[in-house]
Image 1 (cartoon, rainbow, N blue to C red):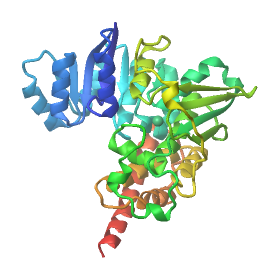
Image 2: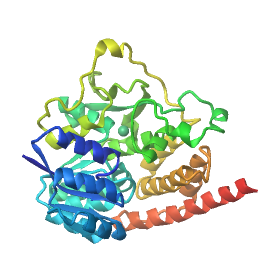
Image 3: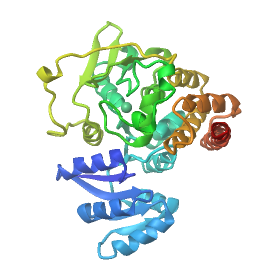
Image 4: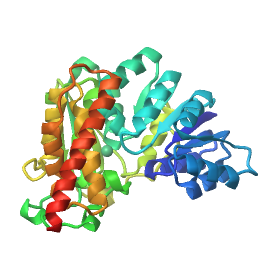
Length: 389
Ligand code: MN
């Protein structure tokens, strides 16, 4: 029996993780957390009967409590409730599929338990990767990435030693706007940005895929998870999304991981490693796949990928600044307050203007995050004002 808690259970990866549990009686769900989607978590509680559930939003927690009064699930409330849930549940592993920087809280709480962390919340590793990896080493928490590229690299790394790595090659679908020029990006709409060609994902990450910010974050994520320098990480556009990433070794051998694009494979891998789960996803049909193509990423048109490399090299709290500025810009785009081309504008401006912290601690990461958010919000406001004129 694999006892599992899902943090952020109502989002895209959270629901896919529950689907893995639904199809595998060996996985028992012990706890669920969500922000405020009461209807969705109520249905999950009725189906999976966890011992605990927590809602970060306090009013939602009260609502949930009345709704599931007939169930045996203990309902906890707010940040403190999430903390108590993580400390008390007898799960063997946690899936952290919370969206955005907020997920860092759950990541740090899970690490305190020393239990396995199946990490889908990439923002926590982007913003606080060095601190997170250090704390995880100290507590004995094993972090398994629930991100298709990093799950692929994790698998490819099982064929060689760390000193034998010559390159991590992260594949990118290119998103909905691959091949477009800067001019053509002027008038793209929110609906265009949300129409991802190969992956079905949440709204925030879908926009991040369209700007290539997601790929930039994945470069930082790979550097932190696998302890590899920026100059040993390449990005290759591979529109079919069949090869999920590769590792090139010093003898020039390249190991790739292929499968249909389906996050459930990553969830199953992260929970069951070093074993594999029977039938986690449908099988790949080579004859239907027909061809695999590779192209260069266009960092002129999509400059956020280049900025991520810079943030990784700048180090310290700079990746946290990048992440925070991007969250503000993307949220403003999702509310249709700024246009697509404004996203990099806001992020670059906030990155420039946010002062560097002298030390790298969890506290300085939170401070940088707050400061970058404030500055990015000002940039966003200035753009909105100009647009209305
Ligand atoms: Mn990914």
